Length: 381
Image (cartoon, rainbow, N blue to C red; front, side, top):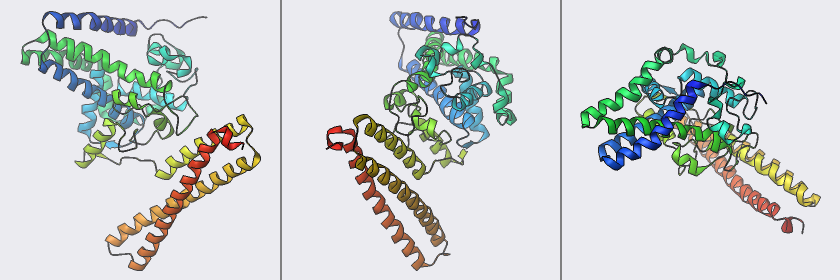
């Protein structure tokens, strides 16, 4: 089979930095050691590069999940150059094509269907047709002068952030080599592979609670190392949501950063998918899996009818609850502004609470049904 030509720039870059990090970082540490300042700068720059990619390149520019002040955009643009993962326009263009053609080996730049190695970094080592530069899908981003400036001066910014900044930190602290090795070389290699894990591991291991339409999976362990990006099944289902981890206990530092910046007016218009949309997606996946179990285990027709009836009833209740919920929150806002009658507000509140109680009751019944259908002995009894 004919293979595309090697991308020698990327091949040399990834090979050289990886080998040097493996050899020089521990060797220097064994002879001279690293102190708390050098490790601290390594951690800070790891976080800076990581969040510049996740909050900036990914959620801000690729998906426009929120809006950001020019200062925030400039900081993320510099951090992206420090991460050495290409300029924003190229990165966002590739990523938008990934979402549009996910798992399509001909058009997805880093299709997981072509293997773990290919989706991790193999796609960058050869000039594949699926990875050919085409900025036609980022015309909106080309209107941002900060992104145009970053692309025009990308090489200078890369050298400044990856060599100049670590050297400056080393000069201030008194050990330039240690700073270059930790805050420069090791940080660069690790921060790149952290991002690449989302393209590879997050499409290979984990759960699919929201959709089975693509290979994307939710992986809480991966989220810990990738600044919250591991909740990838949710992200591919609701890609315009500024969150990836939607529960309060989900580890998503990117979400927390975006939210915290909104408190001081540096980010605005944070986009969130409705609770009803998220729950509907989960219910659909559960319904489809239960239907397959019915076919697999030869479940009697009475159970199949119950499954379909309960599913339709729960979806209808969920939609009605969502309408009451929206009306109730709107009414509370109006009541605070003294433009809503007290009696009407009480009636709407009671209706909303009643629908909420009905939804909880139907959810419990649905969960019992799912448990029964996962156990063929119960379902066929």
